[in-house]
Image (cartoon, rainbow, N blue to C red; front, side):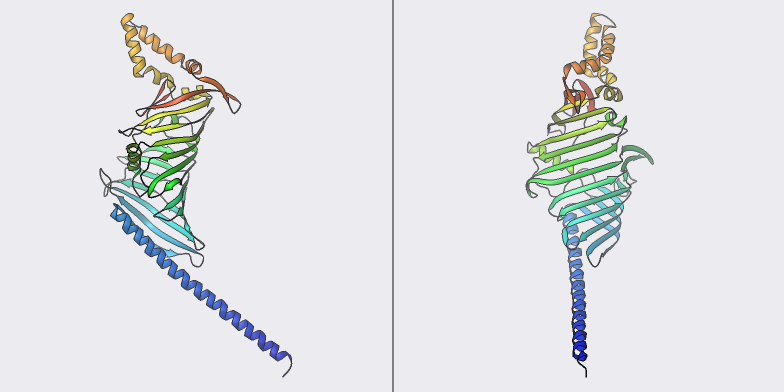
Length: 375
């Protein structure tokens, strides 16, 4: 036996021990992953059961769990959900969902959704449909106690369906919605911060958003919520109204063509679900915006101008109509006189209020229409 034989046997034993350790590590990690995956499925089923008791039933045509070895993946094909509401049940259907959680970050869930999303009464044709090029979400926390939620859409479209024909409601190049817990607890009077970001968004049915695409930023704080248990947003708005809460617009910025507007303010919700309050706006390039929304016609058709025209017609027939036309023709100049002249990012601008009076919107004296009823 040579001197190298003990050394060779020692190296062999070292390699065997290392191999055994690697095999044990792989086996232990595999056992851990499968146990954790089972617990994740159990937690998911528990969440579904709790949601079902609250009138929200979630189903998958086909589902599975994968992602070994370093993450968990839950797949749901042909997803559907039925929500019980005060009026009637609503059914939502989705092409599929992929939910991913890294082993080392179990409280961060990343999801990707396959469209289209359709909404209808159970067993009835769809009334609303939404589609996208890409839709992803991220949730920090747990399903029962989320801390932060983000939704990101590329090229989202929303259409109302009537007699099989699609009526466009919203189009955008990019849309983001972010929400986080700012104060309080999820179960005890939470204060919620919500941020919205849009690029190239337009809504054909809304005059202010139909003429040209809008890039916008809205940062909002909701105060007055009782808790953040799963419930429809109309019920949350009802809570805010009942608790005398408010909606704080901490930052609003919108760019549409040549028009740039920034502002902030506070809104409340009346017992009838209508908005009340005011945002203080500073606008550069106001004239193109007034032309785009047909502000002249809106003012001429407003009840206050109609009453004035009727009174003038009683004094002299035709005087009222002449006054209405003059009001429209001098609208831009009048607003610039009523507002406070200033500058915005180096451009001439005017500051004026955006008022909500029982749901009716006014930009200075210009009626913009009615805001949606929140509940």
